[in-house]
Length: 141
Image (cartoon, rainbow, N blue to C red; front, side, top):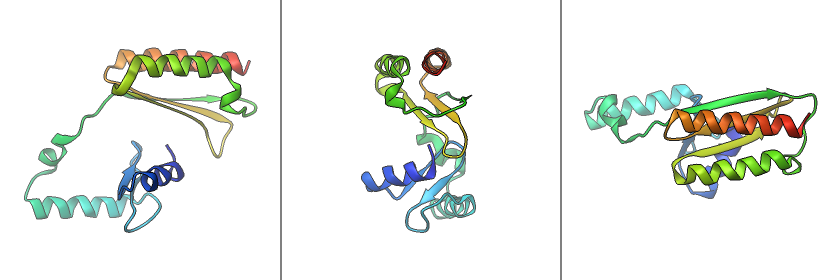
């Protein structure tokens, strides 16, 4: 989450394309920031070159339910100094295994804690999101 972190992950894994659910798509051979117009042109080019409709090209994608929770707090506290959140985070990650992901970070521009949970089922997403938010509130009460 966040162009800076996407670029960092792309460099670590030697990837040429990365992005976020929000639509920020980064093409490292062109730019280091998300650019929807360039991404759209690339998709159109791929459709033209392959002769396939977008629906067919997208068949390889698995879309999982996800929820982004934004919690506003008066002050930011380092995540590693939030024991209830850390404990619940480990628990949820163990439950989800390789079939989901959790990203928790402070907003770079606001005093908001952003909790993103993605999993195979909406029930898993809702359960982990609620427990993580409750844990964060406990730590920052």
